[in-house]
Image (tube, rainbow, N blue to C red; front, side):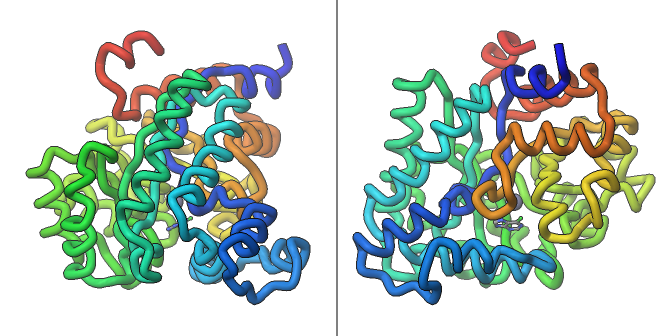
Length: 326
Ligand code: ES4
Ligand code: ZN
């Protein structure tokens, strides 16, 4: 069997996908029309031409603008349902999906609208596609600790609709320790904990995500290879890294896919996984990430199976379900 076919047909879990980053330009324009939201772009083509990023912040500015068309429960459902169907076509059997409630509540959209719409799509995915999907609420790290606490309070009446919390948005200048008390509270509540760290930021941010936030996984974490002691810690404690190769390429974290350090992470014995991050913005869904990265770096079939196994090991599905995927 050719490697691209193996990569496509392997059952996998996706653990690092921002649902707002799955909103395709066509859907942005359709929702802008039906909700009468004005866009600073005249056409789908003009919007797509703006997708030329130089770093994380240059992407985030456009990503938050795109999310401004999401108003109703139906919008949130339609966005997530479109992603889940694409994920199923990529043989994704389980997805843990980030959402950014503050991007919406700041515009006057209710927390309930966001969570109900996204959750309905997850329920439908299990019923219609046999794909299990759960939600992870992300705090925006460029906003304050107080705003994160307010967001948590607003979400707690809907506690049964999400399984954990994460930390995303502009990394440099907003270290994990800014949110130590919020994460401590989430831990008491029994929520799963993850955080973006070491995407653009230094290995020090990965250390504090682990030791101060007590996260169970690191999102990105690719800067960890700069710190040998950190690499030993991640390997020994089997802390998964949710790596997003096309994202790293498009945000210029690596100059070319062939220069990506995924092989180095695997060779060091880390529980690395492959994910799509913001597939509508970065040029591909999960299988595109696998096929393009394997073509550029020359990883093997054995490493493909390792990455698929890692994705289920790193997931928050129960121990019984995990055994079924081994
Ligand atoms: C993100 Cl690539 C990336 N990094 C940090 N925060 C994000 N939110 C959406 N995509
Ligand atoms: Zn991300």
